[in-house]
Image (cartoon, rainbow, N blue to C red; front, side, top):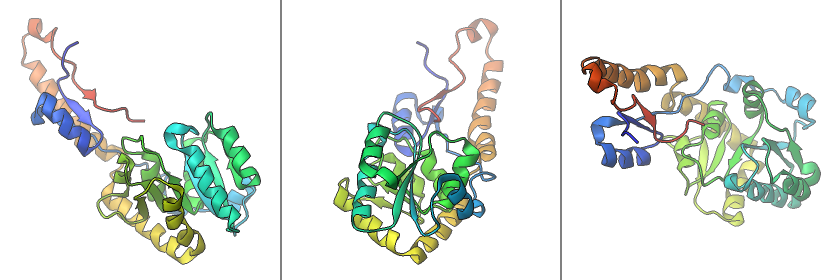
Length: 260
C-alpha cells in the first residue's frame, strides 16, 4: 500500500493521531456540513406529524434516528421511554430507522413506539423540526451527523458525554445536554425536567438553532474551505513532478473516517 498524500480527519482527536503518522502538514480537519435548506426549525408542523404518524399535539415526542441496533443503544433509548411512560409522562418514542432491535423496542413500548422506518432526508428534516427532544445515547459515533442536523432543526439533543458525538453540541454546548453517566438513572434525571417543561424545551430549541448556524458550516463551505484547497495544492505539486515519478505517486487524498 502507498501512503496517502493527505489525510482528512473527522474530529480533533483523529486529526491529532493522523498528524503523528503523516505529519501536521499532510493532515487536516474535514468538518461536517449541514443542509440548512432542509434542516430548519421553520419546518416544525405538529399538524403534519399528527396526520403522518398519529401523534397528538400534547404528546412529547422523543426522536431516535439511526440504525436500530446495539451500536446505537436503541434498546436503551426504548428503556428510557418506557420508564417515562410508566411514570405517567405523555411521551412517545419516534424511531426513524430500521435494524435488528426494532422487535424488542416494539415489545418494550407497544403503543408508545412510533416506528417510522427509514426516512428520506426531506421527511427526516420535517420530523426533526416537529419533535420535542432528540435522544441519542450512542457511544460509537465519530461525530454524529444526525445530532448536528437535529440542532440545526431547533431540536434539543441529549447525547452521551463519553462519546465523540458530544462534539455535535459545539463549543458552547447549548441547545442540548451531554449526559455524563451511561445508566438509566443518569439519563432519566436529565429527561424528566425537559419532558415536564415546554418552556425550557423552547429556550433550548432557540439556542440549538442559533448556535448551530454559528458553529457548523453548510456543505458548500466545507467544499470550498476544507477540500478544495488541499486538492488544488496537491494537484499543483503533482503537476511539477516528472511523469515517470508521478505514476507511482500517492493518492491525492484519503479520509480518516467515513462521512456517513
